[in-house]
Length: 74
Image 1 (cartoon, rainbow, N blue to C red):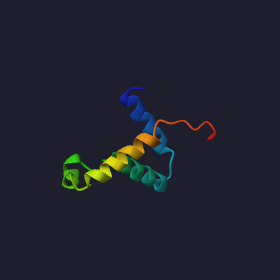
Image 2: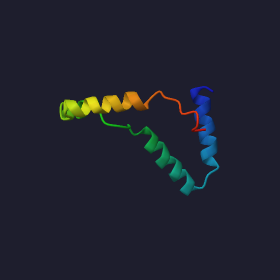
Image 3: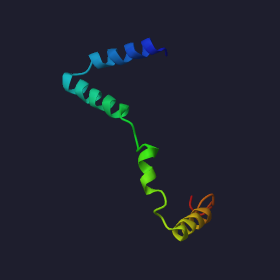
Image 4: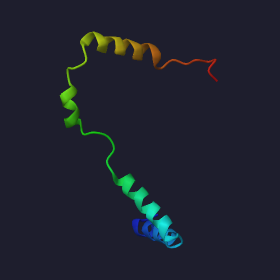
């Protein structure tokens, strides 16, 4: 579907909705357009705050708990 045909399909569906429903679609579209997460630059202030021993413990837990199959789980 091309951009213009997609827009037309969306507009055709919007025309079928009541004004209140159109407002819901608008709110949803606006929510989708919002960026998700935090820019990495803002996260730099946390760099170095976790003690190395804690990082090693987390790494061990990840290595032990990930990529393992529990055949009894299903």
